Length: 144
Image (cartoon, rainbow, N blue to C red; front, side, top):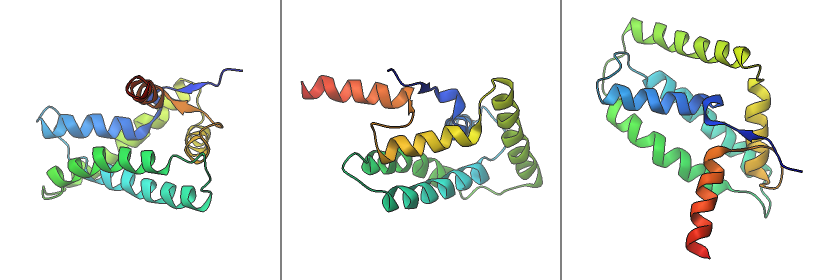
């Protein structure tokens, strides 16, 4: 049986990373640092959950590398910029927009992240992201 795949549009962290890159490139006006901090907070919570359920099928290193390599440089490029009231309002609008999108596409946010964590804890279970499949195919080409 083929498992369902979590497409990248369903992951809030992907939205945050894309927006943050746009902010750094001066395409978008509002500071996403609060979104990045929230993303890192969820990463830390996820890491604790994964460590507590560690087994031979756990992809903890992948999870840590993926989050640190992508998000930490973004935070380092943005963290010194002042946060204005409009940035806080933007954060709330951004998260609300994501939630409305998820309702519109009839997806359960909690199930998405639960399945993602289950897949990281045990790569034979849960749903994987399309990015995982891409990385795995690239790695397999180098190995074989």
